[in-house]
Image 1 (cartoon, rainbow, N blue to C red):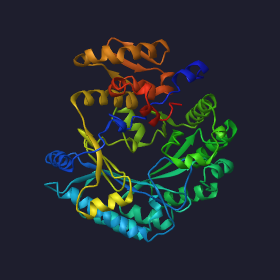
Image 2: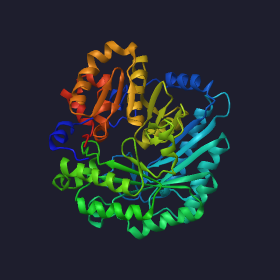
Image 3: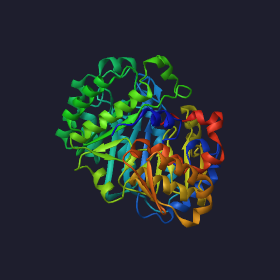
Amino acid sequence: MQVNQHLLEKYNVPVPRYTSYPTIPFWNETIEIKQWENLVRNKFSNETAGISLYIHLPFCESLCTYCGCNKKITTNHQVEGEYLAAVLKEWQLYLNLMEERPVLRELHLGGGTPTFFSPENLYKLIHSILQTVKVHPDYEFGFEGHPNNTTFEHLKTLFELGFKRVSYGIQDHNPKVQAIINRIQPIENVKKAVETARSIGYNSVNFDLIYGLPLQTVESMRTTIEQTIALQPDRIAFYSYAHVPWTSKGQRLFDEYDLPNAATKMQLYQLGKEMFSKAGYIDIGMDHFALPTDSLHEAQLNKKLHRNFMGYTTRQTQSMIGLGVSAISDIEDAFAQNEKTLHNYYEAVCNSTLAVSKGIVLTNEDKHFKKYILDISCNGQTILNKEDEGIITKFVLPELEKLELDNLIELDANVLTVTPLGKHFIRNICSAFDIRLARNHIHNNQQHAQFSKAI
């Protein structure tokens, strides 16, 4: 389905990606540690479904200039021991708040570059954590790997600890694009990383690709997608490049004139969607594609898809603890983010204090509108509750009427359904339910610039 230029220009505005609601700019700048501890303690006093753990491993040997993640560039691998000791101490601080050993259902290593760490150090980290938990029978462990430095030993060590999913940060296979974003990884390295993982026994190999990078063209993207499909990853995250040089200074290292315009960027997305579909991949939510055999597709069919800071997941655990610098925790009724600098993170943990620096406790209204946004982003449909009628009439309905006029949604009584055209603008549709955004008129002040554009 081709999208006309008028819609591209109209909806190419800065909006959140909605990996959380409320979004991070609305979280308090500070959160009392005692308050967070009490929230965690209360949450885990009756938690039986299991928890998720996200561990942020921030180190990279070189700077990828497109990257907006929290990272630390160094070639000094002596930093590994100190960092992992701090993470394990932070985990112990959380364990002290729990009455029983937690049931671990999901574990994800992100970064940075998790495979910056040696296999031996990763073993020490994961083995130490597994000694303190009960592993759920239906668990899922995964990690992010760089094709250039994910070795057989990395893959074998983590597989033996229970990891069955690896996600490779590919971004683009084109040498010119790789050079300008400083992410050079020959296709031979990618192929070897995929084959090695599968030979060991990994049942899910995933690729991250980005469209909208500097120097990308329709033809170069076609080649990248052909090379990707030839390797048959089980799942593909096809992300829109977020150009936010005011927060990610590395993005200032290339000329913005090298970036595809909105129309070309939409062409890149539509090309990917068409090619993935023809290759047998299923369109999942926004940004994701999966083979019919992948658990993400099964979760979509059963309406059990969930979205959080790790992207789309299948487990829907109600509690996610984030460990490490800048990591985010989500305990359903509240969010918290750790200190963003290594110095402040180390200082807090060394003082036997949780490293939380900001967060928010959700109101009942927040919970209602969080559900609307999750329903739209995961299922493409939501039901408007009568108890929210006043707020919806005042803030949401005017936006929905505009979306319906543009054929992005269908409203039938209290049921909202995203149209095929609307799937290109999921973030904009979610934004209609962002009550905090509406109340604070962020569209008219500088805070709005914190968000990347929708296209």
